[in-house]
Amino acid sequence: MSPSGVGVVMKRFMEALLIAGIAIGTAPAVVHAGQQATNNARPVDDDESEKLAKKLSNPISDLVSVPFQFNWYQNVGPLELSTFVLNVQPVIPLQLSNDWNLILRIIVPFVGQPPFFTGDVSTFGVGDITSSFFFSPRNNSGFTWGVGPVFETPSSYQPTIGSGRYSIGPTAVALQQTGKWTIGTLWNQVWSVAGDKRRADVEEMFLQPFIAYQATHTITLTVTSETTANWQATGNDRWTVPLLGLISKLDKFGPFPASYQLGLSWFPAHPDLGPSWNIRGAVVILLPVKK
Image (cartoon, rainbow, N blue to C red; front, side, top):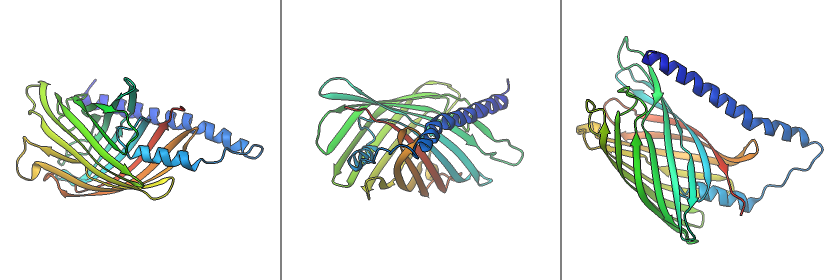
């Protein structure tokens, strides 16, 4: 099968998977709505909602979550078209002992790239998968930190989709939660160690400072940047610096608590081929563990 044929199959598979997931997730909500007429709904627990919302601001909290993050990047390429990226990024905390947690964060990007010149065709595929492992001490204080390795593995050899290289490096996160505020930074640095030798080496840094304010029990306001530095590039192509504002609302997705997010970002620094701004929407399905 040709690369374009594979892309079409993958695209249709993901569409079917998302539709099925939405159908499965919302079916209990429909049944629940029908039962409202005869049964009293369980009242919303403000304390529980506040705790969940606060944990959502912590990238290494002891909360299982499955975010579906939709991004529409604008003014990409010489034709100034849009790139679509769906990041599926589950977070899985594991208790290693009474003193330590291991938090696994995986990012699987499904990328739809526009044509880059007249007569070119758009491409769709899975980009490089990022797997981060954070070893974090268990404590009840407001300060949290974690360190560990990060791995990037190629899933596509399309030049506009993935790097074609296996990369590894360190990652770290630190944050302070005081009252309604969360302030912190997540960082990683990767270098390519294997893969397609015909492709360029990977030497890239990711830096994400963030500040979040919990406005109500269920609404959180966040300002962040997801800065990348490609140390192999020069000039304007080295830095990609978005400034992102997000509003999040904690609610329900079928039987599960979920966070609905909407955001807009502007890129004061970006490669010559863009992007220059981005629209983001996300659904974060939460699987809290009853203790």
